[in-house]
Length: 241
Image (cartoon, rainbow, N blue to C red):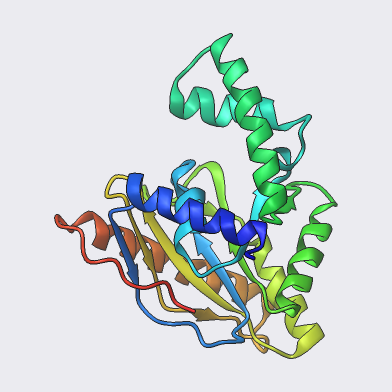
């Protein structure tokens, strides 16, 4: 008998593959036991859904805390999804947001999503939960773009708070985290997984944050442009283990 989250992943992947994903490129397989954090551009609602359905499973995503709270989720969904992407207005937008909000909160619970409390001291809970999951051999998925802070026309500026996970994880385990860049191109209905960028615990942490952010942004942007320049969808590669 499959666990509920395994059934949900299977359903998500089949749905995404049919409706939303034409092309998926996997550049390498993961070595079993590699502490891995996948870093992706957001691409609206398309990025999280496509990445969750297409990358090595199961994944534990960072999500804004509003969509894990039944009281806060409808307002967030109404503003950031129903109005912004579906282009509906009240009263229909409010009704749809309440329906989608209930489904969303239930899915986040089933996926064991990690609530992110930005600009709050509670972000330490997000970091601590993430480190515990890595210690258990789990993999994380993070979308670090800062809304409305455009960087290069492909991605927004990255919030580097997620890199604290790698430092704390090394302090507790002496193991090095690998960050895997993921480019999601909504226009091409495509996803590309890039080569890992390893955390260097012996570098100055301030400089390491700058280096990792820069390499992730450069890799995601390059893969995005590669997908943009491709006219024909390639054969779908197998999901790495």
